[in-house]
Length: 386
Image 1 (cartoon, one colour):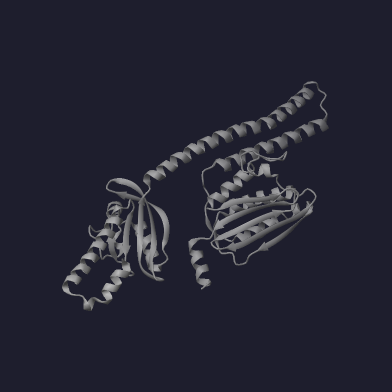
Image 2 (tube, helix red, strand yellow):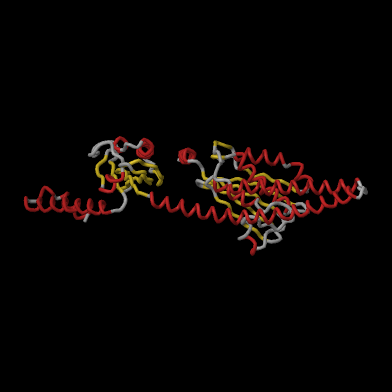
């Protein structure tokens, strides 16, 4: 249809009145059909010209958006939207011609609280941006259902973990009870041996520390997302961690190799939480190499992700156990709470990242943390590559 109209426009000088009327009717009909299609969409659509002026809004957009004017056509899109946060989000996308991914905004509209998801898409024709489309969707019910499911999952997970804590606490408590009884028996019979008392106290101290570790890891694992993200340098954090563990790795006969990409941009980090997560992974790697080996810490930038890899040359993880290692209280060691990797996974997810593991029994394991590059850093990287 587009080609047909272009041919007709090119020959417009040779058209008579009847043909001109037919052409105009065809254009009007095509435009009405397009408006009908857009207005039939469940989501809101607002179309802007290259200057950011509103040239079209479908009915769902008029219904969903808090508008500053009943007729926003020819207004700047951001001025037509009365929600400050949403207006600013759209304005930045339009002024930078960069588009914007779907993002949720809480909206108060006609005495109702809504969650409106909004994104901006550039309209491209033959390689040129000819305008932008703002797409809107009411996700209030969807987000409410997601929240309900999350609460249900959290409750189920909390119940499972509480049962696990109860089970894990029983063992040290039983050991402490036995040694307290032995100490009491010796004191009651006036035949206390200082060496035996000292040994019992050391065991009580060890079991108390074990209990403290279990409870501390449990509290971190079940605490709702509380990471305080600030600009941070992941390479510097890794260097500090290596220095902190230098004595431990030297004693274990582990050679530490650092392969840190100097082009890594600034990331949004809770440095305390991320350092704890990396510490867990490094300690696990050292424990997997009782006879020494090589620990490799590597960072690399790949597109819009920063990868942090912790690799060891230890015993590896059997394939049948790989799917269980992130489960609460799962451990193959005699020490530890079994919550270490659960805590690591939680920290990584709170940073918007992902955690993966590759392992070959007898050759070693690699844990890979992938963290997103902040939006502002993406633009700097993109500009630097042009």
